Image 1 (cartoon, rainbow, N blue to C red):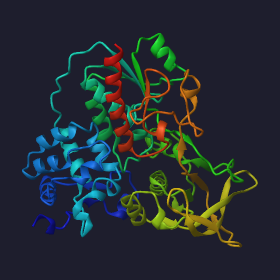
Image 2: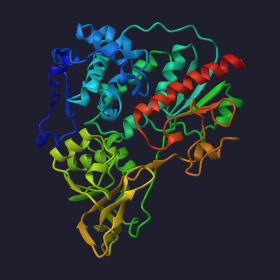
Image 3: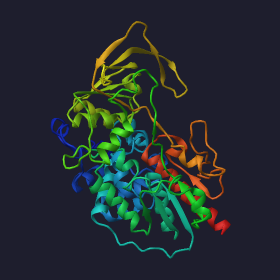
Image 4: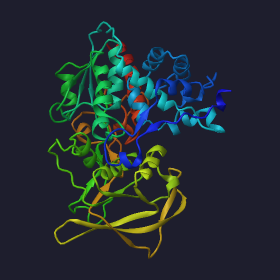
Amino acid sequence: MANKIPRVPVREQDPAVRATNFSEVCLGYSLEEATLEATRCLNCKNPRCVAACPVGIQIPQFIEALKGGDVESAAQIISRDSSLPSICGRVCPQESQCEGSCILGIKGESVAIGKLERFVGDWSLNNPQQVTLPQSNGKRVAIVGSGPAGLACASDLAKLGYQVTVFEALHEVGGVLVYGIPEFRLPKKGVVAKEIDSVKRLGVKFETDVIVGRTVTIDSLMDEEGFDAVFVGSGAGLPRFMGIEGENLNGVLSANEFLTRANLMRAYDDQYDTPIYVGQRVVVVGGGNVAMDAVRTARRLGAEATIVYRRSEAELPARLEEVHHAKEEGIEFRMLTNPTRVLGDDKGWVVGLNCLKMELGEPDASGRRSPIEVEGSDFEIACDVVIMALGTSPNPLIASTTANLETTRRGCIVADEDGRTTRKGVFAGGDTVTGAATVILAMGAGRKAAAAIDKYLQEEC
């Protein structure tokens, strides 16, 4: 029976080698490996994996096509619901979504849905299909931000005949896909740039170096430039800090800044004149995917790298695969540890981090057990750099320069489940509404907003 076939392992770089380079860790499936893994799928009549996918990919259908070696059909099936399959196959938290709902996972290993999606997505990038552009309906939509939410919304609207323009604040398109996720997890030229090219082939236009709220405003886009609707998918790029003593020392920075320098500005590449300081010892505070990205980047830049997290390993919010890879690469994990002060020398540079040991108490509002300080457990960790990976919030610039756009106490734009905001004609989705989340959830929000924008413009115009 198909469910007796063991899960096909994915080829990876050797940990000792990859810890010194920025080449992709996972090498992906060959056609033979992908076809064999596809045969494990039971093709359930009521596929729980589809319900668990935020964009609703018809997973059993594309896997069934792949079983027969028909990669082109598999790609066409995925493309109905996802405009970024190569990206999602690499960075989605499948273990808590599609694969986590796979019936094979109850007593064994789930189907490697993410790796199969990646295989099909990569095939599509290397075998681009001719695109038949729909006839324009004459209506114009502006997208703020070229991250996953903006790209998903732009793709769906373009397929419906809208004239779509995406405005990006930075000099490269891609949002968090280019500045936030490291090259060793998500190659920029080989994957991100090609995925964006596929969106461009739909007729979507991109304008970079446009800061909405400064260069232009949402009000001016609608009232002066003639856009019929606007989707805000600007993400959550405002970093949070702990507010402890010593955070103003040289050598303390946010994971957002650190990863932007390393990824978008290619500080890891000797051919680029972008300074990035890691010293000999780096401590990253946090336990999410961004923390894993930062600590593994620091390791590749030559530093001894440590994760400090105030809960236990069981509560780590990062993907299991990223934690596993980090350990293989020599990252030290200091669990149940909470920083209380950054230590500095007389010249203002970081020399260490003062911490307290923690123990777990009762669950908090999120369901995770609350960490409690262990009295008298102070100790120090010697380090040159402290990177704070504690989450991010939306930049308040857009909301503060847009009339009648309501925000929450944390600065997130208020929107309903379809992305409608309190400003007529303005929709929002992704991290700018929910706070920092995942690529696939942002894409799902972008797709819902696209459908809502289409309905709104058909009714209004």
